[in-house]
Image 1 (cartoon, rainbow, N blue to C red):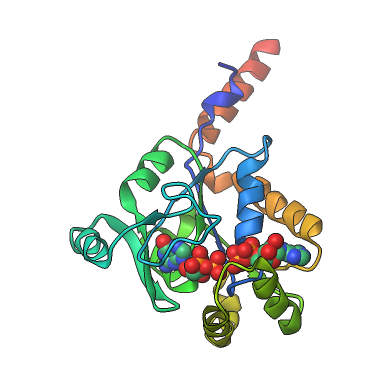
Image 2 (tube, protein in one colour):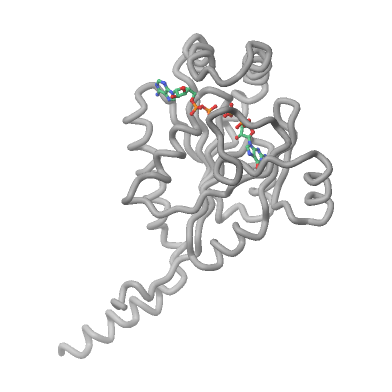
Length: 218
Ligand SMILES: Nc1nc2c(ncn2[C@@H]2O[C@H](COP(=O)(O)OP(=O)(O)O)[C@@H](O)[C@H]2O)c(=O)[nH]1
Ligand SMILES: Nc1ncnc2c1ncn2[C@@H]1O[C@H](COP(=O)(O)OP(=O)(O)O)[C@@H](O)[C@H]1O
């Protein structure tokens, strides 16, 4: 162990939200796949139907409504919300364990869930809102993804009326035009937030060590 590794840091909660189709899943997957970034994904529970490309337990835990209600009622969810007519929630235990071990946790959740995380631990939340460069592009991304029926796509576009105005509640905004640029910015946000003084629990002790080593040089 080096002296600097004893500084220690509380894990942070990196929340990425956007209207459906703006690109938050693409951006969060890139973070998870990047060998330079170590972050745990919070895998949500949902009552929505699985898309063909999704794997149960990886993208979501797909569960029946009865089970969702039981989890919510027994306090097993850190936050939960109804979005586009389905229920979504964050299982509490894996998040609390990761944070306690100093690992950062990534959330792909909506603005309602983000507000609930703010209430429980504002200082530990770093929130990023992804906007599309244009509504025509948002619509064509939803269509190009080709995983939802036209009714589902219309409902998601309709919901963008409520979701887009939530931008002002977030710490950072990404207008996701060029994917590489957006990804570079997202990674920079995470790295900068990790270096915030107030997250480094053992910093004062570390600096005391530097100072006494300086004294010893005299
Ligand atoms: N509050 C909350 N929102 C969630 C959770 N999981 C997913 N969501 C949000 O639910 C919305 C719908 O997600 P999804 O069905 O995967 O559709 P997509 O956004 O079009 O990919 C998105 O805004 C997600 O960020 C969760 O655990 N809690
Ligand atoms: N910057 C971008 N330029 C072009 N297409 C993009 C960009 N970001 C994402 N996409 C595409 O748009 C579609 C929706 O992206 P996705 O990440 O699933 O959105 P969300 O999770 O916000 O609903 C996907 O087909 C994805 O490949």
